Image 1 (spheres, rainbow, N blue to C red):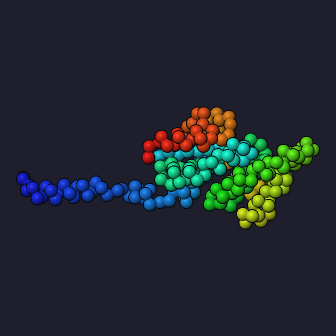
Image 2: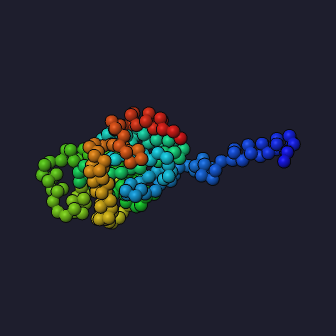
Length: 235
């Protein structure tokens, strides 16, 4: 069967049009502001961005690590606007607990559910220098007292000494809500499980450390080194 030139030209135009139409997934990625999407990973970490992103970046961090506070300050705007927003990279925060003070802050950062997490997370890191100074200037006797009692009692002592109650009050939490979060055993179990996975399985030894699709990124512990690595990833 033969076709005239007019028909072939029409068919070619139709084919070109079909190819140019993006898939539903591509359209959704282009239209979605992924910086507004927060989900939970199977490890219990909080993810901002496309949960099905090609490149899944995770930070293993400690709230008592000044390098982690620096990373939050330096990366906050660029990480979201230059990478997460496009949908090809997601960013997850996971815990690598170093001490009881860190555990206390981590418990409270998770208080209120996934939509509250990143605001709490940023608030603790932004004020880190102030509340860490409280512990650094405390006497040995005071520090010893923080290690006495049950785990929930110790976490409450730490929260009181650091004025975490005041920090959380500014974010809309009552003292009762703070105490309930500190006593949440399931939350504590998730945090400690992430720490065990980080140190036992991934063999991470410091904070912040980063993984890409659950594989450690070697010799990258700050935004200065991480950003070029992310820029090299294909969209």
